[in-house]
Image 1: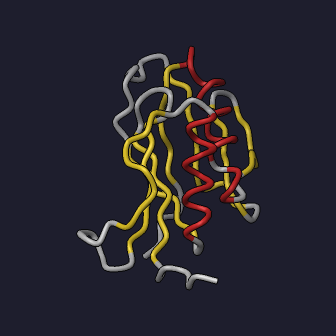
Image 2: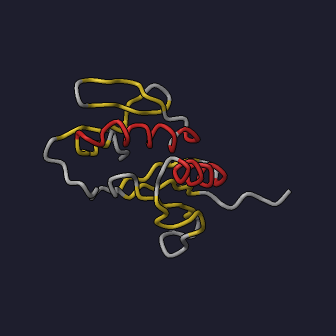
Length: 130
C-alpha cells in the first residue's frame, strides 16, 4: 500500500521558512506548491498534493517527523541533498548506499529548519559507468 499523503506541523512563526525550504529542496523531485489554505500548504509532483505543511501555535520547535521521498534516479538523491543544504538544511547522512536497509537502497538525509528528518531515496541498482 502506498502512502496517500504526509503532513508535518511546524510553529506558525517558522511556517513560511519551512515551506520555502521544502520548495527549494524538493524541486529536483518535481515538487511544487499545489494548494494553499489558511495555515496549510500542499506540495506535490504530478498535480497531487501529497506533502502538507501545517502551521500550528503549539507545534514543537524541534521536528519529530521522518519523511522519505522516492525517486527512480540516484542522481536526483544527490540533487535533493545539495539543494536542501543550500536551502538551509543540516546534513543527517550524505547520499550513498545503505545496504543494511536493502541491497539497492541509496539515500540521503537532512534535517529541515525545525529538525524534521527528511530523506530522498532510490531503490534501484547503481547506474552503469559511461
